[in-house]
Picture 1 (cartoon, rainbow, N blue to C red):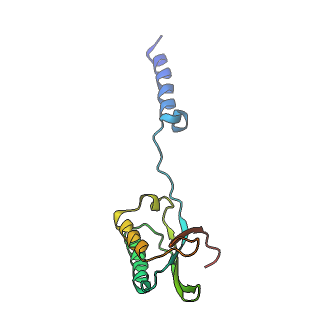
Picture 2 (picture 1 turned 90 degrees about the horizontal axis):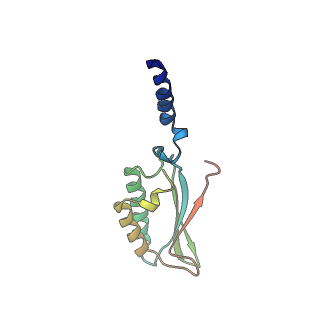
Picture 3 (picture 1 turned 120 degrees about the vertical axis):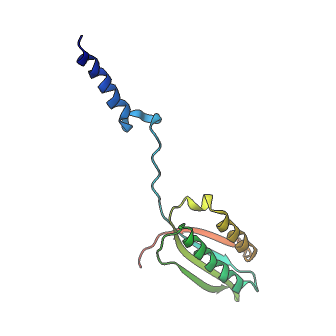
Length: 138
């Protein structure tokens, strides 16, 4: 057997080992693609906390943008009343990745704690309601 005949099996083995599709569970994990998530958050403001809550919602958006957690797409904050004179806010925005809220930075978690102090439950609804939505038109 000459030297070249030994190289062929070795070359084939190197090709097989370097092909990610053929390595199965031993392949290096590929980074997961980001999947944006648009959310609608409803805040049922405690009486007397409306102005503070509006400021905290705005600070949440500014902080999330500065940390590159949200898409730089239009966001909207709405204010309304329910049950006669009880104020609520709705904030619609898009997380850069739907996994972000599950592992949010400390700065965002601190804002969420503050938000929770400024809202109240109403009927069977929690003080903060999160709904995943999709944008139909802009």
